Length: 256
Image (tube, rainbow, N blue to C red; front, top):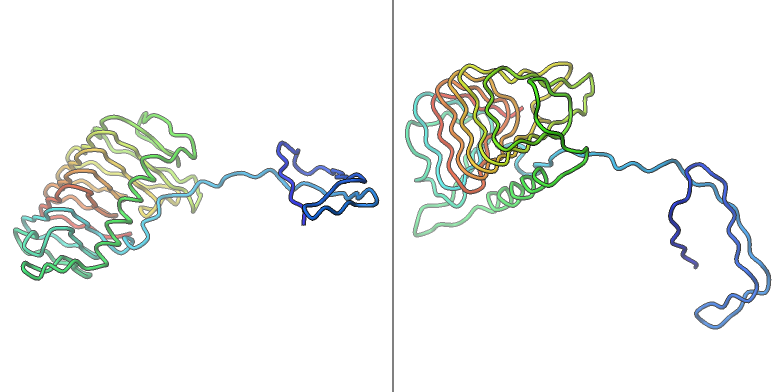
């Protein structure tokens, strides 16, 4: 067999390839006659952007590193996990969890559930992908209406309602890269229009997240450090931290 590496061929064009008499193969044999063939190139190849893949974390509404504490009547619709913390690191008022609770066993047993290990690995991978992806090209946060794409900002202080418009594209996705802190003021709505879906919205945050009272929030938050959801905030999405804690106050967190 013969392999050619050829670049910069135009799309949808006819080409001719020719092997001349006297070419020697690796075994020392020569071809006796010219060999010619024609081929047509295909269409332009375009890398298709892909959104963040949560893999084993898809069913988790809460995934924490060191602590989950709660005050008030908090409802979690989805699974809850904490690693490397143990069951003793889920503190405060009891949580209403409509899903599975995964936590390391208490000492001296302290057996780490492989589901948690897989979840932690998937969180690190998803966070890194969101942090580093550049397709489509990231653009700075500006205004309060966002069409699908990747946006970046150092500190994101959301003080007015914002709208995510899918433009009738069922595959529309958003990645917000926040280098430092994400802060959402009280009673703010993250509104979805024209087919936008919370499952396709990701907030990658380099430091801490504070969600104000009475906020209606959409999307999966992946924070490096702490997340605090204040009284009555409703999150359709997920709260996940790599190295910090999650603080809840009479919230509802539901996977999309």
